[in-house]
Image (cartoon, rainbow, N blue to C red):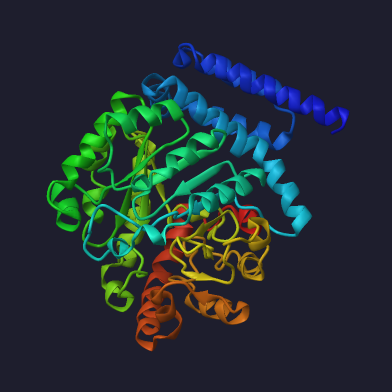
Length: 461
């Protein structure tokens, strides 16, 4: 490490130390000091511009100011400091250069985040879910999960999403969270396993932000997950709020619950419970019966309505919503195989949680080697799949893409539903029709809502 590198490292350490000190005492009163300190230590033009953009939006919006102050006042100090250090400093600052360096060395793209499903086991038996069919022998062993997390962290990946099954059903994950305390973990949970001991442990760790899966109020949630489940989830939220542990929610949005999960009543309820963010994932026909499940997908009108409603909710800033599909213009379209990917419970390396195809299995294989695969290179080469970034997906928007990509790369289905996606004439006819019906409305919305443009720089990656 040269003299210049040492100076930059020292400046970063001073900045992080200074911000952590301000966060430790009346952080809501030190916001301007935090911005001033960051400005003082930022050297590169790109980061400086990002900081000024953030400050501009913060200083010109009372809603954003109230949202930020609420987070600073209600979040446990340990959790607050871990979020800044692991996400802001490590993932968004230190990690950028680290990921770029590894990518150059191996002629590949290191993703910003990795999703891992260590286990498919669950304590619930939800209608239409296959997780109850798995046992402990189907889990990825602790040593293997620990290896993958370490290798990802060493490549500069400091933000990881934990899926399942039910992530808190697998007790060894708490040991992983503790050992890798410089990484930020986001487990997506059914919310039924939280008790005083678990909440206390998460408060001590500080680097875990759970996302509660909710499909609406009690009627919608209990009809699929079982009687009384909604109340259990609410108790879990109350417990985390009382201990100052940040959490958010995740809603699989289908045509039978879109109006509920985007309603003012639902958002107000989540906000009052203490949720800081909300993910909206449009229902995808990737379950056990995809041909039949197409009927539950959002109509073209509903899909665009979800995007518009998400932006309205975001302007109110009671919490911060993210719409996995309709926010695509902000991130350059599809991010699969480029900025994120998924390791399933069989250790297949999939580009996306919804795209069940793989050419690599990471069992005993270095993660950097698997990420260097031709399959992911082919995906990135084709990004964006459509100039209209409201049509980002190669499976439901640009349907010939997934068929071509699988043929060119030799990617194999990792779930029976994926095989149907590329081989069933009935499914392909239905999904092609769905895409054709969405296109004219999406083209109109892209022009009206986004002026016909988006983050093409990120699309090129």
